[in-house]
Image (tube, rainbow over all chains, first blue to last red; front, top):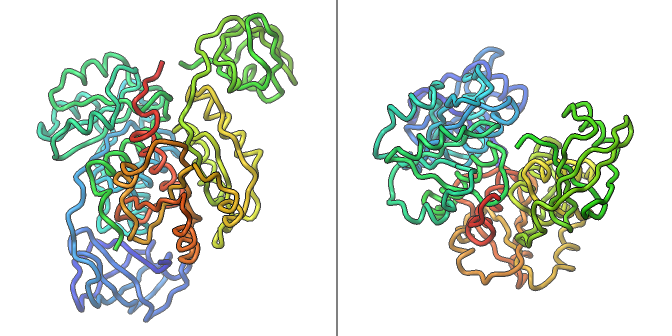
Length: 245
Length: 245
């Protein structure tokens, strides 16, 4: 379980030689203390998971030769998370843990009370890759460019249900609300640290693809709300009934 | 929503004068920039929630006079969390977020692969208090002294169901497993970063009060597993159907 598992961009197939980047070379060599000939596991989000062996290992790059497939690529739950960027520690944790919980796409969204004007997408992507490698996912969640909330909803795919975490107290409990939804693509929307403005929630409530939900009597931090909603959705309507391989 | 909300030890009742400690005095004065006469909200886990006004504010201490009750003490879900201590950032986050999710009691438990020999209970308690103040709970979770896993189960209250997060792949999915349980006191048990040893899980599986559950196909970090399990339990069997006041 403590082996080396890496996400790569290249196609994977028996006999292919795959280049590892400088960060992966550093990790393999200096963190994991591996050498030429040692086994690694590779995935790219398209071709399943493969064993490979390190065939070259320099300071700036490394390469591995692919051997055999250990798991085929398989469908994953189609759940997105739209979130207002948070402070660095909170947003890093949100990306890491929602990746573990199987989020398919992460969408930073700028609301009226969003404080973090600058979103470091490269850092967030790196956290998502690392979490995907660790949790044995066969994919890395997509990371969308930040958009304003009104632009997000204006371009929203109408067949994707948007589950809005609403802490005003009049939204139905999430478990009951999910029970009333037909199966299909889903997304969760959580607000910034200070919450949505009332007018934002009122506007969301007018949209035909929105389902407002409550997460119980306590006031959850934004990242806690995202994790809780995603965990509940996976358990009730996602792949919570599947088992590790 | 951004007012001052403090957990105190003293009894609360109309007209009572309550002493605040040095940390609270610092927070009120230097972080929240409040002064004598400003309002605060107090709770103690027994007498509900009360408004009060600051009547004294020094560098090392402060006091407030209690005015009127805003919420009576109310029953809360009886869900415990037993967890193997993790690295500092992860365990702090676990305590903070499970407090938000309404955990009633936190029990550090030492398993065979637990790395953190030393548990700083004072720091964890401080995180629990701060999270309870922020999330508008009327209580702070109890923090038990660390015990070994075998001691924990030897003294276990037999009427409390122990839901063990088991990532070996043969445990039933958590939603299905919860649906088969009668209502009653519950606890979640999550292992350390490296997971339980197989022999530990085998022993747990022999105990009449244990229900092993799976959390889906991905390998969750220990703190993610704790949050996910607690969020799902609250949504399906706890107070997820209650609303903020």
